[in-house]
Amino acid sequence: MISFDDLFRIDPDVEYFPEYDCKGEYNGICFHRIKAITYNGAMYKGKPTRIFAHIGFPENTQKPVPAVVLVHGGGGHPDDVWIKKWNEHGYAAIAMSTDGFFPCQPMPLCEGHGSECMVHKLVHPFHKEGYIETPGTTHIADSDIPIKDQWMYHAVASVILANNLLHRDERVTSDRIGICGISWGGIIAAITIGYDPRFAFAIPIYGSGYLGCGHSGLDKIFNVPGTQKWYAEKRFDRVKIPVMWLCWNDDCCFSVNSNSMSYQDTKQGNSNTCLSMIHNMGHSHSCAYTPKESYWFADEVLAGNRIPEVTAEYAGNTVKYSCSVKTKSIRLFYITEKMTYTNREKHGLRNTFMEQDWQIVDLDPDKNQATLPDNAVGKYTEFTLENGIVLTTPYNEFKNQTQCRQE
Image (cartoon, rainbow, N blue to C red; front, side, top):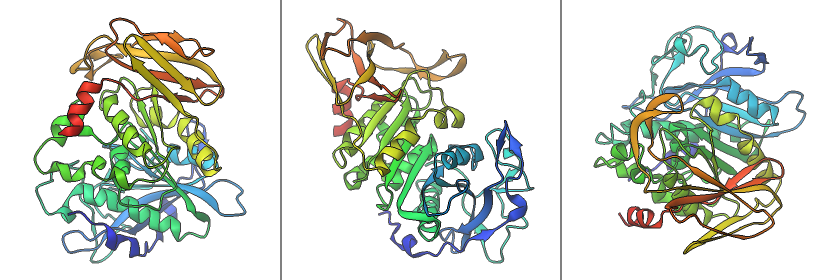
């Protein structure tokens, strides 16, 4: 039994380290308003822990602002470019180290810049008598040890405690805090929203629930005995906030059936939940935070607007499709056989990729019905709104999805 209830009462006890602030520029971006801090983590092996983070606020703010907790991907560190992106959209943003890493010297911590100076140790000046660092990344390979010693427990705890920190910050509007995670950070975000109901919105990017049903190789990790405790989908019935499941339709790490089932489950808890599977997106921090979908979604949700509803129904050789607002374009994506993944050359890389290539058919935005290609097996429909935002219907290959849900 996993419980994080005791964490909600923890005071973050923030300490500020100005010498580790981002003072310079990187790729033309100025980071002078992003601050280096530490805060209390969960107890680990009977000892208190500290967590390193960077936090940034928008320029020239005179009143409390909305905020977002940013959860980095596997092997990553707090990403200041990502923080800055959210700051430019009017949000405070905090990005924490989910794996006990601290900088060993003052440097900007942008993606690809400064991360070589991160070490898994409470080094000076972050050392505090009696405290230790949280466990390093094991993903869920340590699922056979006591829960409160596992990396995933502490990763989720670091997010909940960052939320505590933002809730106690007078510069933040406490009921307008969201969460966004990339890759393994998306997995952490998907798990966290089943335990922490305080978020106003969630945007897991790439990572999702139903990873044991995926095809990209993570299914082998998530089907090891004992890992089921970390299945995000086990608590999707508790998720009542709007969620955008944002992903690459040909991801090397996650397959779209997992994102699609996560969308279908959480859509039941909030009608503003949506799915956006991006063609040619790529997989990295920068590929994740560059698309405008995540910022648009947060703005729409906090403004109280309705997220456009998109639907597609497949019957025989026909697809019936609709969108509740005017669209710029509508496209059918399909593959001609069951989705499978192998290690192969694709997109200029060697990695675990989908063996199939997406076939694309333009649909008429002025109609609501079209004939399906005879050989379409797996499929989904993409709607591009007039503002360029992409929303999609879930990947449809019903037989396999139904079998996976039953397991």
